[in-house]
Length: 179
Ligand SMILES: CC(C)(COP(=O)(O)OP(=O)(O)OC[C@H]1O[C@@H](n2cnc3c(N)ncnc32)[C@H](O)[C@@H]1OP(=O)(O)O)[C@@H](O)C(=O)NCCC(=O)NCCS
Image 1: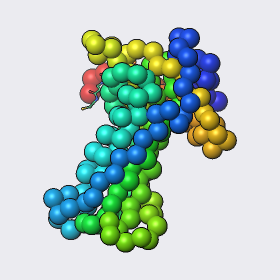
Image 2: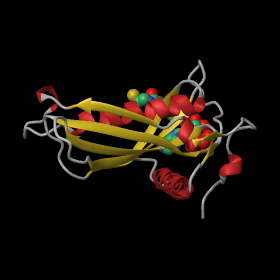
Image 3: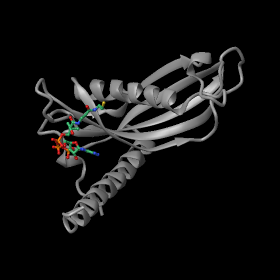
């Protein structure tokens, strides 16, 4: 069961297709990006993921948006110095004031013509905010392909689980007020 469907979004704002805000951010990894093992620091990738997702959230919502959460950040294989990293981001789902942005991280050697391989993925929730930092309504995203319709449904499942987990943990803490 999910907590809300597409019609719950947006306060009558006109919808926007997924493709309208899809964004790719590319960056060549240098020695400045490495960890103590000599591969690229996970935090460098997470910054790019947050930047790309933030651009999508800003474009989709038509104004400022802040990161509310980042989950399921997966690092599938190490990224190396000399890798050209592409961070592909798109709006998977919209609620009333929040958006789930899905991100896929690809890497290829900067000077070779071998195909890029996937090295990571993540889902971020952004909240659109007004000038006072208060949540504001976002346009509903209109999935523009079968794949994006499937991503929308999957995002709703994640949303339901996020809310249920937060509620369950809050209730548990309320039962133990002395800690
Ligand atoms: C995100 C923020 C605006 C939410 O404000 P709030 O007063 O809790 O407002 P709400 O409870 O109405 O939440 C707004 C929306 O964000 C969603 N949201 C809030 N916290 C969330 C979380 N931790 N995970 C997922 N979604 C979240 C809510 O479900 C709601 O979505 P909906 O309107 O589509 O249903 C506020 O917590 C904030 O400003 N956080 C700091 C953001 C920031 O600075 N990010 C950069 C980190 S350096």
